[in-house]
Length: 416
Ligand SMILES: Nc1ncnc2c1ncn2[C@@H]1O[C@H](COP(=O)(O)OP(=O)(O)OP(=O)(O)O)[C@@H](O)[C@H]1O
Ligand SMILES: [Mg+2]
Image 1 (cartoon, rainbow, N blue to C red):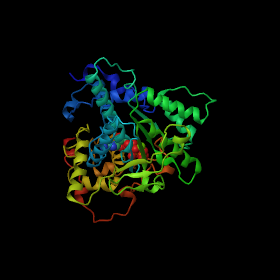
Image 2: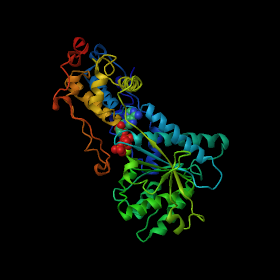
Image 3: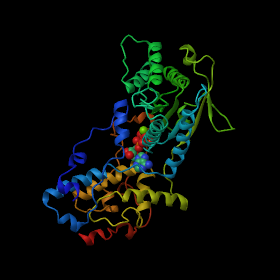
């Protein structure tokens, strides 16, 4: 008996879950522990669905909708490359005993290309591994003790970041006390204490390209952020098109290893975090979007679509609903190979397909859907966090001759 038949476990997928607030330690831990626990709706064909009672159908439909809005994060050739570098850097740094400053990583890419989700998954996996390692090496160690409390800290750069507001954003992650009277030296000291007391090995600052390097305040903030590297954490900075943002303007590329070398942090000196002035080193890694030029690139895109279609629960959709015919090419045209735009199109398409009882994704269904990314809270359009997505086909003049296969609704129609 499935969960919707017995009524068991319904709350898990029906009750509106709070959006995970990963910017606090509690929210982060909650997300990390539950991130793989979603159970997709059982797969039913039209006949099996029709055999359900009206109440069971309603519940099953809700579970299907929930499944379409909780599509899993898929490994892609691009996420693989980023994971290899970032995970390797974090692990290497965490196991380092020497008090030297750890090299950081900058993760760059266009908006909606999965930077945040990919990095969160990498650091959550690191934390899982780190905690497991501690349990094996020292079975008496309990969560909550130093070195185990918050191995990673995830912080979003404030939209108008100043040194003080950046410190406060970090302290907010830990829920550390912030008093109105605290000046910058107090805040920096408190950040150092929090990182150390919680055994933090990785500090992520997301949306770092909100800093505008022509502003003195923002340059000062970047200098302060570099100071955190003397606190023996691996600093990960995530941003849209970092090379063009000016963040590296003071840096130079070391041809021997490709790392960017930035000047020592003045804040580290002023706040006594570091006795000697050390340059800051960063690997720069790009999370690219899919491309559609070579056979390998096309195969990778089709693979990704196959991973998504395995999670769709439309009653009349053929097994190759996204990978068959011209669908891969059509979906690429619509999304430019941007995973976030694809996810939005598929999710909205599934809603439309269920509402209209079409119960399959066809070019016709998808052509009615606009990919709207602008209204997504928490993104800063001025920082390039919203990618340019091509208009839908019906809005542009058709570039190629009419292709009947494109408009074929496939076997979906016959099954109905
Ligand atoms: N590898 C993936 N597989 C499937 N879906 C993905 C993948 N990566 C990201 N997504 C989806 O794409 C959407 C955008 O991802 P994310 O927020 O990580 O992008 P971003 O690059 O951080 O964007 P921004 O620059 O606006 O912050 C998310 O809803 C996420 O679930
Ligand atoms: Mg992001």
